[in-house]
Image (cartoon, rainbow, N blue to C red; front, side):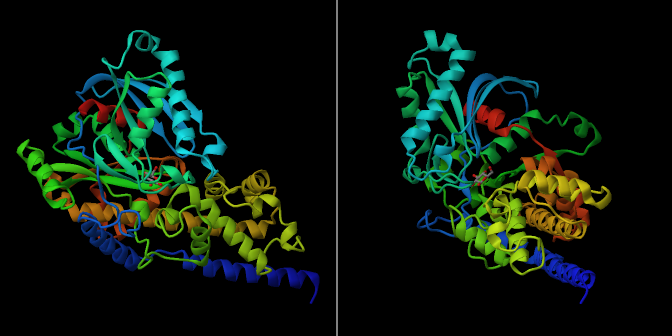
Length: 496
Ligand code: BGC
């Protein structure tokens, strides 16, 4: 065989292998039906009491103790703090009562030794949060520091975007970490108590953590506050927000559920709320943990390997197929596998010679995939540069064609799976049939839904081929709702 023939044969073998993988990543309409039905079943199960939340593999369905959605007339100045996957942010939010707000904020990167190290302690983490809160107060609210005392506290809403077993509006124990955090001694502890104690220690007894909220709940609340439905009211197309969701580093969603149906809530609390005229409560589904038993989710060997090597094996399996933290890692695992099968990057004689970054877990960011996804340059030159820059990985034009196919298959699977919980919640709540014209708003936030090219339209397409159907899909309005973890947490603190 000539060198040219050999080259052609390898290229053909690569194409064949990639086409097979692309087929494996496909989510068919039948799969969407199956997953949506199972999601509804799991939601119903999750609303019932759970024996052991730490080991339960079902959908957590956590009551948020928030019973209403703001309408934009709320007023007040409140503090908010937000512990995300990479940053910690402190803000003060002034709600103007006309759907608008002003915000001052300070952001700090979470030090690596707190994020990646399982020898770090809760005291260190919450000590860091308290010191950053103090720095914010010194800069933006020195007057509160000077005159404030514990007798005249200022309210703070704490956005903590990890699964907590919430027991009231301002208490909840961490069930488990997700998105990379590992600190073992925080698990099982009340995160409000930890933060409040650290604030006192740091000289901030006047800051009172009155509300604990998930970022999805914040997104739903902030969407309710900022969206002005006056226009749609005059046209008769009233749509109300009922779902808040995040597609970013992690993924999750919350929705308004009828209190009567939340059987896991204590009976006396339910009675009390109903007597107050409260009919609904926001449920944080923690849908990242959908189908941890892998009864229906697609599972390639790459998904299995990524889960095994993760900080929370066996949990958040839906998130590991959908969220931004994992998209690049799936592609990296596929590429290493294709190399091991002798189908790609044949310039490297042994695995050890592969660029170090290609061998490093989580080194391939989903942002790189977003460049490859829409690359239409000659010879996929953008892709070439992106891979060189991010992984120091040279590629041939034919390899790049295959890599682009893989990227598109991975992102499409993510967006199609993302449609499942949205369709399921809409069907379960029957919201499309309840309202005039049945319009529904979904407040969304997160880097993937905001920036990943085509993600939203792929998600919409999946909704149309899901059990919702094309007619249902047209009534669903996916709206970007920015900064739920700031404004939303402040709104939560306001009602506390
Ligand atoms: C967490 C959720 C959070 C989501 C989005 C997930 O890993 O478990 O609580 O809402 O990420 O930030």
